[in-house]
Image 1 (cartoon, rainbow, N blue to C red):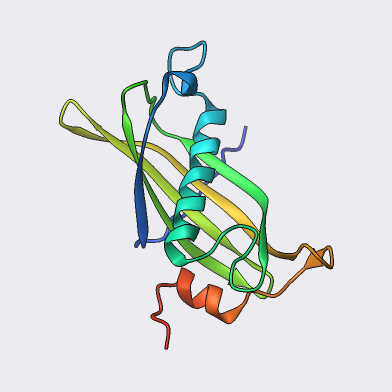
Image 2 (image 1 turned 180 degrees about the horizontal axis):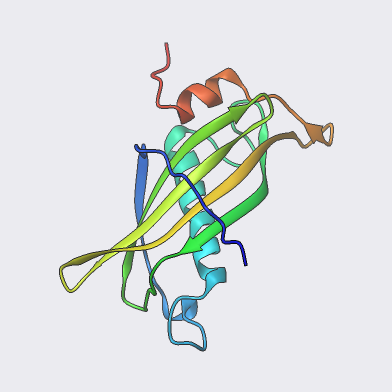
Length: 147
């Protein structure tokens, strides 16, 4: 079976800590794959908020997640505090990719928990169609200071 491969950018321009809750743990005794995806969503919302945007209002456009890829590297457990690093790359006229690196420190050892990517498409909810990436959104995502 072919495995998914991701090439993460060298630099991440946002990070946030998200603690693992008991409700994130599955029958296997570790964080479920669905919980990591949910936490990626939370990290994305925090990143957008940091930029002054939301998924419904991102400098003149809405955002829709078109695809997702997650590669699980290590188990995570209740009590871990996960560091989510987020950055944007691979811009097209109508969207971009958000990349995620998820890690924790356990017993003084740094562990990579997961790597992920969400393909984001700009969307005009009123017109019900895709929209172009606003220049201000792209600048903010790329860490370019506003004029």
